Image 1 (cartoon, one colour):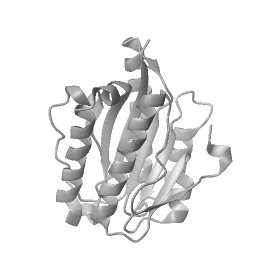
Image 2: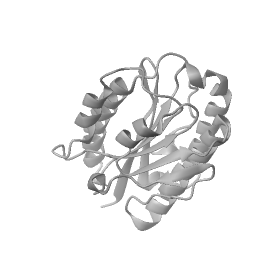
Image 3: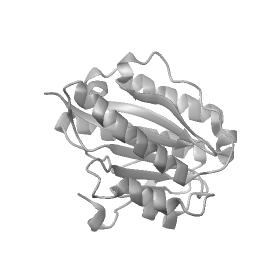
Image 4: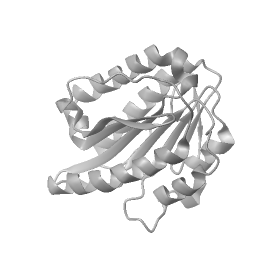
Length: 216
């Protein structure tokens, strides 16, 4: 039975990202290209891309990227709604893990790569987040967060359960590129070992270890 890592690339597409929309889409296209042209990785890491702002959009549902012809364009604008995002990701995980198992895959614990340039605009997002990562839910994911631009370290320290990366002052566009490269390197390493491995050396970012009690 083949191993499969359900992977969610959850990316901020709020109004603060509007000036960087072109680079965001070019970076996501590069992510798609690198996964689609590396069969070993695309077979191991099934990927869903989720863009969030005032609403949450599943840009690409859980897929073998080799089977996806192109990355759809993301349009930026709106607020930074964390709570809705975590609710939607939980719904996706519930459905996706079941679907992957019907394909006779041995499904590993899901991993969420959360990329944001800002602080949440909704006040009660923590409730949704706690539901997502509740250990009583067998499918609770690892969360790896990348913060840049106006993202707040203290907020992302509440979100990251596996690892946190904070941009070291690089401009948003360089940071975005660095985050996607780090994400790709993590998936490449994980595909070789058959388990989730984090590439901790990410250009333009400080790696922050998260509290040990979250790591399992």
